[in-house]
Length: 211
Image (cartoon, rainbow, N blue to C red):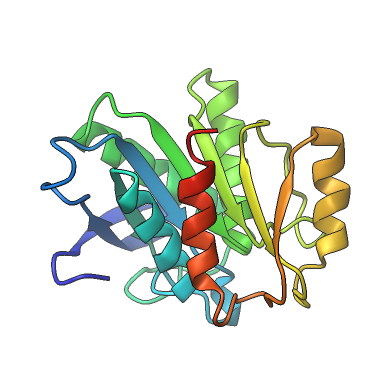
């Protein structure tokens, strides 16, 4: 993502996991404010950790002073294994979280995701909540409601969706978010991949972060 992006490999249940780490600007932040794990869209439809929305989420978290880490899901890029319908992917994201918490102990955690990645992160949050160690916040873009069985998420989650998303219908996101009483921020004219609208994602995340 930048010339300073650190690439590293973890060993998961299905083999090697290809990861990328970025640190916040040391001139702006004396120390990182937290950890942000960012999950990419569906691996069977071209999703990678270098997806533009995924990178935009990582940059948004860097701008807030968070360490941003991404991972290619199973079967993508340098990651071994094969697509596991979100189950193995959630296991791998939990492994990445444990690795990052060992490397940067004591920092608050944010889980961010795009499309299929929102399903993975919501499942991981459900696990963490059951262990009484939930992430402090979720940032979900193109939330996969209606495509996958999205678990409930906390009320402080930031939800962003495109008005003309023809991959994940906006109405399905409204139907999922309504009983949770969580606002959905809609970007007018944006499709699923937010072509020419990516700057709105970063602006919304940074504006909403302290609310």
